[in-house]
Length: 267
Length: 115
View (cartoon, rainbow over the protein chains, first blue to last red):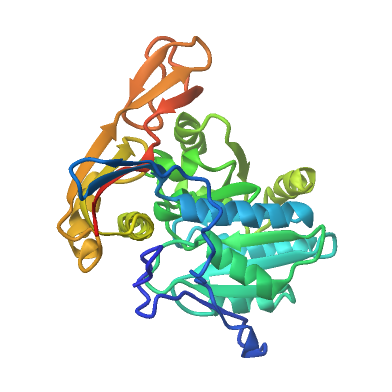
């Protein structure tokens, strides 16, 4: 089990892999835990009580290590003017299909890079690779979310150029990824209309921490008759600042507005 | 089940600080966990014993300072307590608010035995 994030890999390592038909020399250990912690700001007051007992006051954020890694990533992305999105959702909402559609339509306009997070398989990376977009797969093993050091290591292999857009597709899970900042500019939560209108209040943390909500599979609306306003109302209760786009990755419906948002928000 | 990640993060901090203090064992660890932090106390309890086995925290007393959620309404400035991140202002019903407590997730202090 990994000593920092608790991902269940017995050897304590998430794996980073290039897609099937690429050279495999890009395999890295995602968890380089040998960071130097020598310069972190902390107070170390010792109050000797009864001889051998000492109280150490810390007030230390438990997610401190991930947060420091996220800020390191953010600095790198800022310096290279790379716009980074963290795509989060439950499994099966259509994250990969949305990515495929977006990349297909916009790859002539922007330089895209993709990091795919899944517990197992290279399937998603292979789908992106088929579009000739540079991609790295991070397999977290039993781990339920990506962490900032996995992104750091993936980016070292991916080597995104200046002024590009990096899309990070997180592990399909509406709970755990919400707590782990990766260094992204914006977090995009995807909900499909097959999932039930009350998902935003069932899993509020993810909607609370996101900037944009893509409502996907709108092409199925004639069969489902989902209450889209209700989805939005619930989501706004959790996060009144959310921006919504109703889209279908399959038909392309509504994608133009999402593309405009992307263009506008890219630095 | 990110509570295991949280437990392992706590252990990492405890191990590092215990070593720095030239101590070998933690008698007591104090955590501060907010109601809106995203951590389920029951789930943390569930993984705790197994996670701390063979670490400096094995057998240590675990004290959790639970911080309830509080927010300030951005429309009418009313301060109110909240249990869920989607609770709204009881006075004007607005959902626009600033969370002022409840997001805490801290190791407050360690009580260690010096060599």
